Length: 396
Ligand code: PMP
Image (cartoon, rainbow, N blue to C red; front, side, top):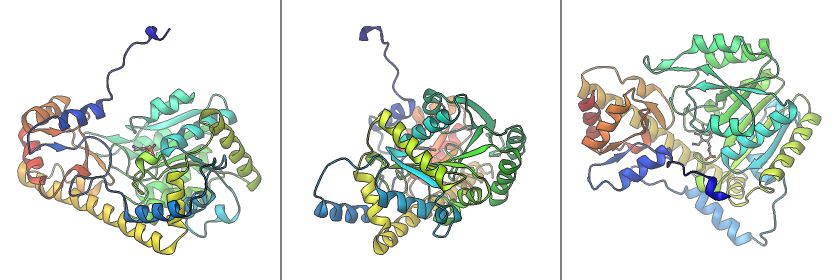
């Protein structure tokens, strides 16, 4: 029966990585795949993670299953840094949460809970959005719809069009927002714009769903959480998929948290029981290692300080590279066309090139990006930025 299957082409992003790896050009630059890289091109293990792992291994006595909702220190720690110490939803016990395999696993569990609550749930995602949102959440069974978000020509949010689309939403409809560091555009809502989304959610009664995969990489741990914290104060129900892949560098450890903010503590307990049951249907039990690392870090003042310092360094490097790239592009192109890159946040921005220009960058200059011209800013270094800027100018 398996002979009925047809083979699928490799993922285009991974294809770019492989093509770059096989390119002998010593000047080659990989701006494709979406992981953080340091100045040496490595995706390092955080020092706080190394220390936490050592402590966990020294104290470990069993590999028996963790409980279905997951590691309680992880859940406590993540919800505290997400909502902030004194948030009323924590004080009131209105938060349901279940550990999940990465932000992707959290998205999948939350899709399940939305479908159990209402079988025909519409989920509205931004155009553009992370390449796996529609496949992952659509395959779970949600009715996927799209609202305008980013104008690639203008290199700016299409905020008015977004507001018009959200004005049409109502109770029983769910709107997915990126907590910060929008993937793929790098364009985030300002606080004022978040407040407008809060007004609309209150007035119209739709449920906000925040995908939070880059906490701390935009403006800071508290600033990046502005939208989540504000919405959690204002609306009765909120959904959050949290990923520790980027901000703890735990990608392969599959460390995420599925979170609901519910109208009452009783409903939060119900949501938790439903999410644990959905996880049971999908993969039974959550993985232990990544969550125990995050739990260990966030339960310890010194490790938390060390981790916060590392997140700050990562963020400062990304934002510094953005400024550097836009300055270099101003020099090589003689225009201010690329100034917007400095103001965007997170790993990604669009260059606004055609697939043909992207192909020329690859074949003529060994500069690798994905066909949409999304770049991973972390692939730039002080050493290669001049070459990258000249290369981009050469295909304009
Ligand atoms: N959401 C967004 C917006 C992402 O960019 C990513 C990772 N690329 C995820 C979710 C999933 O992250 P994880 O690796 O933790 O599953």
